[in-house]
Image (cartoon, rainbow, N blue to C red):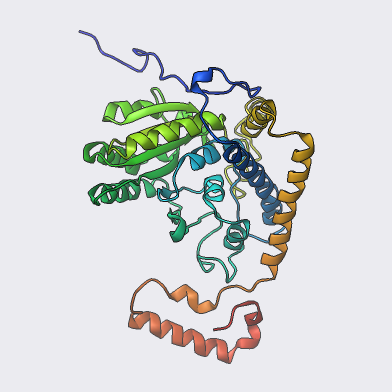
Length: 383
């Protein structure tokens, strides 16, 4: 008789393509990516960093309500986004801005959403970083952890039932979300229904302030995939090329109606969000600096591009200025745009507005007409 535990097996290995110096570890594993795509990947990562830096400042100045940074996870976002096809459906959480940038969402569209002005697709009704874009197959993010996971599997099941399907769904979630009941339900539904879905875990070491060693026992999130019958891989999330190759292959598997679980190991260099005022009291400065300096996804890809003769310091300097300028210019424009009309908060829920909402709208209209001098109506879009 023998009882097994988490130490009875070797840990699932971490798949890598390049080392910390941007050198390819094994040439047979180097993905075949054309130069234009490689440069687009790197430029997206740099643009993402500039948005993080400037939008953090905007939040601190009180211009937007909150922001979630992407530092340390640029390789996960851009590497995976580049390996997908435009027709594939994205269920993001709230730390996938790089995926959406690569998919084609513009800096203007993103900043309008963060500012909640009248050009925001959400019409000012979502908190910042909860993006959606129907035309680009991006499902609007939800705040509750793991909410998107069963939904993503359901969408993938619908794809499976459609004739001549060549689409898959990718669903992003964090290591903290993997502790939710919805995550386990999604894993099991995906496996038993054999859905064309890639369940992509960003294991960045912390669920807000809670480290992974206080979240779960066993061999991380990837081990759950094996137990439930999902094709599974663990990848270095700071290596954009490894992520690209893993997602590229995962997509080939998924569209054969074989669900895949990817666990990308990375580190959340920044705070969970600007609502996190812990000042990183739950982790050491040395720990943060080590990851930021030694396991920097942007730096790794830059060194790889330089080694191939595709990038240099002069190009870097010029593009950094361009990336920063477009964010600053767009923020100035967004700041001047009016907020959505107040009626938007009561619309777009029901196909036909029920009487109780119609009554509230009429009451509000009369109230504003009577006391309009007490409200900044000039800051809101007119009908």
